[in-house]
Image (cartoon, rainbow, N blue to C red):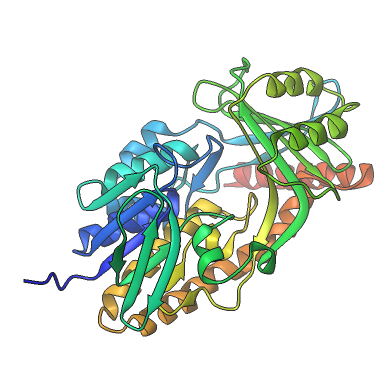
Length: 375
């Protein structure tokens, strides 16, 4: 007898894809996840689970595991060339949020879905052949299969988006910022504080992580390089940070000495529609708000919205996908608009911008402290 349950293929076992797999699998769908890497495809960069994503984590029963893997970070301090604190910013806004390495978040979400979904690692989609009744999918290694719905949750450089919608260049807006990160294991005095140093258009940060500190280089540049070209990335980093002060030369040397690094441009994905027939996009593939826009939380919220929409209209995919997109765009729009503001906070373009940022944060901090004393 033919299985009447909807068959869903998810490309990507990162935060968005793993969350959707767990939710749909538990709801009774036939879920298959393909992931190009052995294991989960996520950097170790710290990410936040907050707002609606916190509720999704509670729904999946993984909150205690997220808290066990969480960092202790509560504050970001800005320092001058000598390491003296000049301003600070609270990084936690409530008790209902948690920060943890992205790779740990992805792994925990994958484990949450393993019992109810099929995961195929070291696999990638090479062709999509959609028709009115489903999508025939060609894989790199596995035998061809047919699915009722294909979900591209494969990140900023989505292969599903390229196959179903067209070139990345048609949808990606490069914001003129790059980020490079690596876990370096450099000792830090405090495990609850991120330290950042700025020069015009450049930022260097030390994050305590969860026992092994990491460094981040965030900078503005008009250069356009391919994120897949490690030598071009290394050269751009060397040129950009060659005369930058504080501990930059120490951290840059350590970064350049390790192979386990992350490098990419900061981009914003904008599309008129996230769905085309029986193919839809989720997370960064649909609406990347790279680095500054609660990307992981947005991915988890989007997965929950898509799962709910599919359950509300299981026999009408077009209606379900339209409901998903309409609801989640309302969440994403303000976060995408806030990307530019956040970039100016972390990477001011000028020395005047750095000074104004520091003074503003100190004023906000004093007012917050005064309110707490009154209360």
